[in-house]
Image 1 (cartoon, one colour):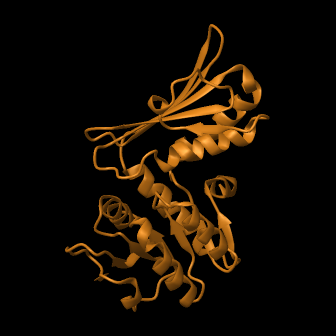
Image 2 (cartoon, rainbow, N blue to C red):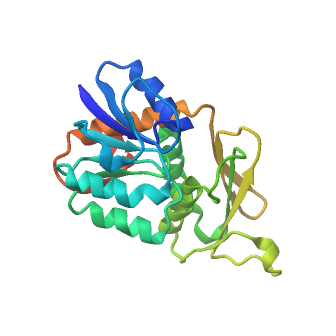
Length: 253
């Protein structure tokens, strides 16, 4: 039985993880951390440093500002494996995750969906085949409560596509700011925020007289919760420090 410490337990994703784990027999949430007022079927702490319940792995669906205390807690509690699912990390925080993985087992993905990660692999392959003959645009859509833009997943897709191209890429987020024709090295990234859209991502390869489109639509936040829990079970068995992601989980299946 894998014991999980859940950060951000009272948020939307935290509650989705809680509901999912309650239906499983191979793991349980032994404690949660959240600044919000509320309760759960397990002890909830407002400060991670106050947690005194032993756990096998940590899942984080909280806020980027809490990354430093979370990594510190994991380091101080026997190199506790950590699954980081929070989006919106800046460059300095991403570097901190990389540095922490030198002495901690860390699973980090800006999207825990199997389908999205397959989309990324397909987009990389398309970029290799189509290369400079096609312009690439990424459109992401999310609910009106989402704070960060573009989404972490859109940036994942852009990074993957960029790595597959021979010509170095440059991301363009706002075409209104510059009045000129599109340049070949650009990857356009557009964000839509509205309603209750769970998450939609579209990769457009626009060439001469033809357009190839790859897309993924999330129907429920439950799929991200399932990915996080599966990652936690995968990581709980890792005693070796390192930075793991969805490709490692898929390879282990």
